[in-house]
Amino acid sequence: MYAKTTLENGIRVVTENIPGMRSIAIGVMVDTGLRDEPEDKQGIAHMAEHLIFQGTSSRNSQQIARMMDEAGGQMGGFTSRDYTMYTATVLDDYRTYALDLLGDILLNSLFLEVDLEREKDTIIREIAATLDYPNQLTDAMLKAHVWQGHYLGRLITGTPESVQSITREDLIYFVHSRYLPDRIIITAAGNLEHDEFVAQVRDAFWRLIGAGPTVAGTGPAHQSGIALENRQVSQLYFALGLEARPYAHADRYALHVFNKALGDGISSRLYRRIRDEVGLVYHIDSEYHAYRDAGLLVIEGSTSPELFGQVLERTLGELQSIMSGTDPITDEEIWKAKMQVRAQHLIASENTHTRMGRLATQEFYFGDSISPEEILGEIESIDGDTLRHVSQQLLMNACHNPAIAIIGPDAEALCSAGDTAGLLNIFCKN
Image 1 (cartoon, one colour):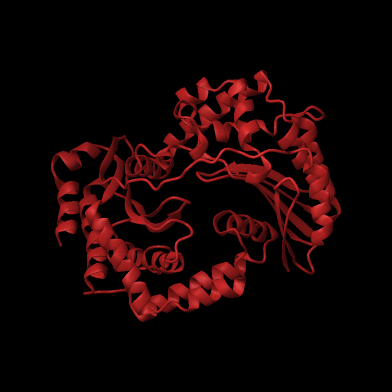
Image 2: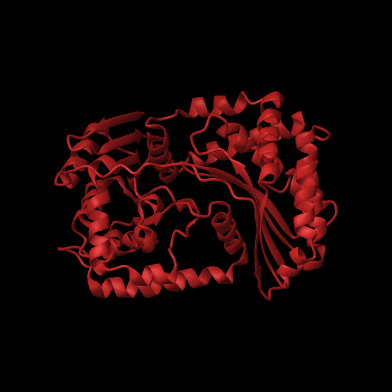
């Protein structure tokens, strides 16, 4: 059962009672992320998320960790491009205990200088570790190129230079000006009673007052072109980006189904025709990345450098045939994709952490809850005409500004010879 209450100080509390559960998953979502970061302090939202677990006025980091271990639970946090999230999953007996701890770290963290300097080193190593994973790096390169000059194109971690520049005063100002009641959503799913949980949230967060500044958000201009990096790796890695819809757009369900049919899974069109039938790649897939102000459908994969031209030609050929209608997504492919999306939604729903996360993201992006019945109904209502219209519109937009990121040995030679740029131009002219 879904319920929502707004506290006197402005914090929104959203819960779902799930009968038969002994666990409860709790989330504190803060409406702050890359959008709020000063240009010269990139990564400060991520740094704050790291430091918040390093000690409060009453508990040090070891005591915080021990408290969660003793409760038999899990506690953590992450920073996305749109928001910052803190979570705890515990037995229902410990929900007051977990809320007290979450309230303590969000209201009373000290951000000590010694902890800041240690976390700087940790995050800089985290940034460096990305270089060991070319598939992650191509994704970062693609977003930086496509959304250059916009906050969505930045690294969540920041750069080594921006991380080093962050001071304790910067952190304290950032948290005190952004971690405010009107920007906080607290959600919980599992064995709970809503009014009782609201009272416990009020006890843990009553001292939090004030309102954060409004930051106007605008969608980025989608930039076309090619981003390259020469690297001595055995495979060539690529990420092709197609401009898509933001998270809350009405086409979101159709985009998820189209993505599933196109490249998400081993029975998808790209995997079947480029990997299974002709063996040109070991890995190829697609993902729909959606944010508050923009979206991107990413086709990424890896292959031998000498085969990349054929892989790109076939990939663009598949997109061209869908867009032109010569080989559209079939009714059978649509049915299969809908069944997969439906099944994945239902299977994930058996996890309290997932249910809690859905409450938070739905409140964040829509200001309300979307029932499972409505979600499944929207998925089921997608027919061939709807999907073909959405996919053709997506691909026609992509023709005006195709973008690709490539990492591999002699990557620059691919473009100096005109191969990659030529294929992209052919795709657009057709």
